[in-house]
Image (tube, rainbow, N blue to C red; front, side, top):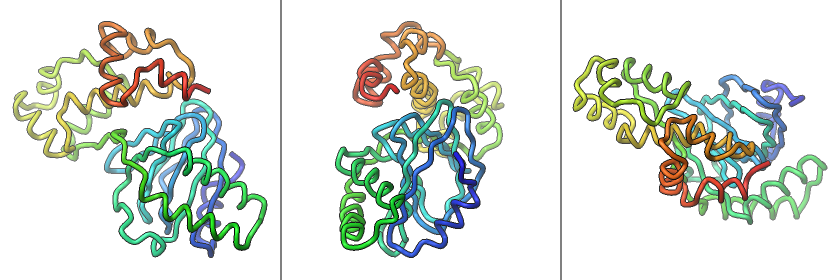
Length: 261
């Protein structure tokens, strides 16, 4: 990563076209501090896993996915392993009705190829009809990308937020919910009610998604499914596989075969 974040922000701000495309390769354990752009951003990791954070929550972005960041949304980016990222920055007036909140999108092979080519064209300095047609095609295809359940919204209540942050630092699928209620100073019923009201998710579903967040970078890096499952507190690899398939529609090993670097 040779370009500073301020340099990238300045380049995006100076861009005149409908779409500005750029690539960045991040080393392991990189962190891009909070910042924002005056354009919508589509962030796609062609290898590795990105973690994007805002005040509202976290989004995990594995290969075959992208994250949508609306114009003006402050966000930070982190990596555990090396990541090759390709981004599109879109002028807001070019996509009326674009999502107003961050979200993870499933990338189709077509859009993935278009994004990679858009970055290659930008880096070569090519302009003209071909670049314009590619931008038009992207604007047609991007709204068709499906949203994926890889968001982890955070609650606003301080005690609940602290529980979530502690869980993200050390996920444990076996953590007793009654213990969470005690630490939050609430009854179990109050905890579940407040948590769902503030995040939109049942607390157990939130914790399962947090475990997937923790697992994805390790699976992409090639770690054994058994080791990942046991580290996350699952009683067996089978229990972890059942949860993983329910969320992502495939087993951890199937996921590894298609995305491991």
